[in-house]
Amino acid sequence: MPPVKFFSQYNVMFIPLYCTLLFSMTAQAGDLEITPMLGYTFSPELISGDNTEELATTNEANLALAFSWKDSTDGQGQVLLNYISRDFTDNIDQSNHSFDTLYAHFNGVAFFKEKNHITTVGMGVGMTYFNSDFDSAIYPSVTFAVGTRYKLSDKLAFITELRAYATLTKDDESVFCQDGTCVAHIDDAVWFDGQISIGLAYNF
Image (cartoon, rainbow, N blue to C red):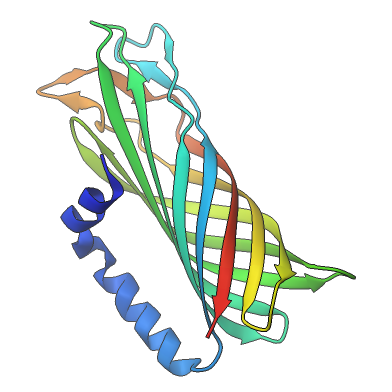
């Protein structure tokens, strides 16, 4: 599913995030930062509906947008949105199915100054929204990241990041089921995604 259609269809999910972001921006005026990022996601496998074989999900590009504010001299608060659209093929009739994921997290990011750059370490909690051809669901999740910041100017920095997501799913999840028939299941109680991304941070 294209990102524009996905976000317009489910924008009601972002109202609490927007309100929180607006409050944070107001409280931290002059220390705001926006960071668009592009990366690549390494996806785990699903299990077939009859639990007989693993189904590969495609590794795809991810789009992310971070809104940050200065929380201390060596750190930031952050709202991070991250979107991935991927596919998998079932083992019933070899049909291809879409499997979109949206991560929304509140993060804390610590800065460690090095000689020529800043090393960043971030952790956060939030939610994962899964949307397939059959159903959708929201689960709690956590994220952890390490990265670097290279200052390009007083307002611009180049970002690199390695990020992991862990989503706590339910044993009876039905994201890939319809009318009692399931083409796939999440294999474990925890869904892991790994990403490598780059971006540009602009400071207001």
